[in-house]
Image (cartoon, rainbow, N blue to C red; front, side, top):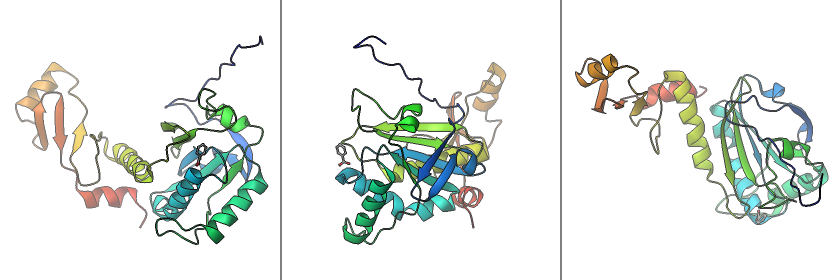
Length: 238
Ligand code: BEZ
């Protein structure tokens, strides 16, 4: 390759199977995504161990791990640091860091060591315009069949909103379960969106009020009620 010529890396896309890899983690070896078949999994990267924004993120995510587990979703972290750095950082978090009422926080989900950057490169987590020595804050939502369903990227300086990650997970599970879509800022209990009418006849029927459960603002914009308890019962473990 000529000097100054940037290597082009194909990044995984929504709808692709999650690229497979084996890795060493703080919870032992993993075979990804095979070990997670049947569960949702969030694979996320952070720039570096022993950095403050990442520390605030890990404390927040670890505190919410059980909530994600109830939604049948496991968490897997990654940075291009080594295993002993990961172990030392997670020990420091538990022993010394108190932040926003969180303390004594134990990170029980696996954190991948990726000093070779193999996994980070495969998942497009190294974005040289931002940094060529640190992963950006990437989030991959992978469904129980091992397919990538959503991807979010944040720059190094911006800590993620973990309530939004949970909201996105629940919304995708509701969409799968009930064959609906979810509008802006949707949360369980809010009205959901029906796909647009697929024919002139269906559009007319909708506007003539033939689908009684629908509330149509126009032929292409119809909502319907979806009971909060029904949603939660369908997508959360008991
Ligand atoms: C942080 O996690 O604090 C951080 C990491 C890399 C660059 C900037 C901030």
